[in-house]
Image (tube, rainbow, N blue to C red; front, side, top):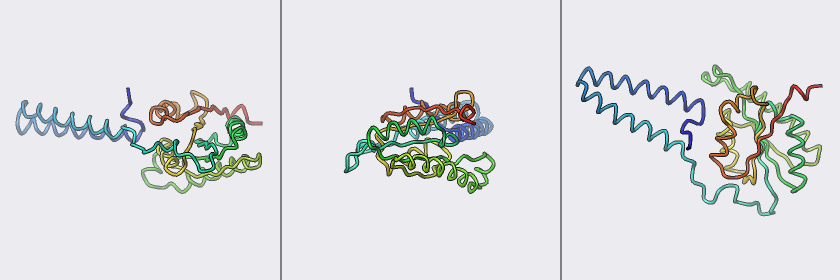
Amino acid sequence: MRNPLRTEAEAFSFVLVVGVLFLAVALAAVLGGATVALAVFGALALGVAAGFYLRSEPKVREPAVWERRAADGRRRILVVANETVAGTELRDEVLRRARDANAEVLVVTPALNSRLRHWTSDEDRAREEAQERLDASLAALREAGVDARGQVGDDDPLQAIEDALRGFSADEILLSTHPPGRSNWLERGLVANARDRWSCPITHVVVDLAREAP
């Protein structure tokens, strides 16, 4: 069953809408009595549920973006990682796949941001830090002979993937996270949500930066 709430932002919006719904029902009860309140509740609840579910439906792509093969026939790999983007485990996985297929690689690093900075639209520092991590990863891949480029993405990794797929016809996606228990993305169900939304192959790569540290 598809989860209609894919991100924290959507969950917050849902809670806000539910609060407004109950306020409307309370007002209807005061003005029109229990019968009117029940009718208002039913209509609004149905509308809210339908609205959130329809918003969660995957967008129609004709044809699917990963089916639009490049003119040169090369395989395309989309890599999505934030703090783990320069990890050895991820780099080795990208190298293995890219070399075997002479692939083109796009690395996307979502701009991590605090909730306070997000609400105040102060994202410059988060994007600068993401760019630094991305540059280090790209330098290592290029030095190893991989045709790689990159971009800083939206702080919501699902949105970052969708944005990247609009211009990059990925044959597969590599999602990199910290180990379980230390990964916010895993706690939010990123890998499962991504596999539910896109049908191209998605590989989860776990990077333990603490173990890799000298």
